Image (cartoon, rainbow, N blue to C red; front, side, top):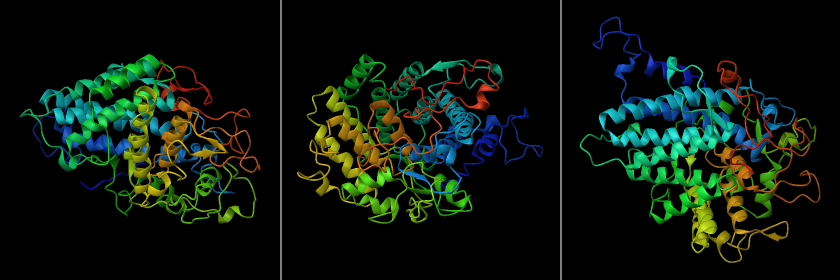
Length: 500
């Protein structure tokens, strides 16, 4: 199936195409435009990819920009203005980077997934039931991680409930996990199921990979609970792993959308948004934070991400500076066919390694960690073998930062952060920093001689209280201005429910 992901219009055009209910008779006549089918004509196979494209367009577009900057992978070009609000932590509730992910992932994402789930349930098409459930859970989880709360239990009811209450993040998480368990319990050998095939933009209809995605998503949500609900996290993770559940791995492939092409509206959403739609292709420049860490370890991925083994970099958020080197700072390398990762193979291995350290004595952690680093390198066409071998820069138990050997969890999350530079996936680095505190926040700015490469800095032009960094997006104006049950705005420096 050819991907069309014009992210700017996906929330209106595609949703309208699938969900115009004109009240006409079921039989077609000349008064029914065949280009705009009615609700009754929708099927899980038709609607599911629309939802996937909505999630892809925002996770791989707006959130890739926010995540890449807030994870200090890249930064705003100096003396330019395109993303200064992002890079200075100045995202207000009316900003497009705040409103658009909420609007599109709700209206074109969650709404369409719920339609797929409802229709598939009535048809006993358990393949599509699982697909819709997992993507609804993934999309809702991203929204909760961004905004902390959202309408869920009363949401998606249309005119029946125009002011749905906001549910707390933990309640939503537990509901999502329960829904995944229900979907995994269905009979996928039933005669009523259909093969998704090319309508499945993620795994091409390979159901065993969807089961692995479902389990890996559950593992991810349980790990997010370790600060707020450690007992629930412990029970959930140990039960999941002891059950013999399969997770995303090199055989299943990552949960990613990859079928992009180099044409307007058919390309990677970050490329479409940041390069094709703008009058310049050089807004996103190398961040000193990421570059200094890659250089300190002679990491070959630096060439993949920045086109040079010694790129000039900009100190994070220093976009007002007239530093004479900044105009020559390396541009973050993007192509029209880059994938958008939901959960990558590397991320899955790192999550499993963390779970093994926390709950199983760490006996399998080294092997899982090595598989994670190997997968992260392979995604960029590089070989990690010398880096994870004894004496290598990233060898298990011996990786050093600022003269101090990293602890196991710290080492896992550090490598996980580096892997998120691939696949429009930087937002996950932001989430993981807020969950674990890693990579650590630097006590000094990156211009200091005492700066430790790779530690996150408070950006130069931050609008926040000195020393603070953002931990969430504020509630969007599009919701708070219309929903009478919307809570008061919470500052972006307040941790979400699972944060440290």
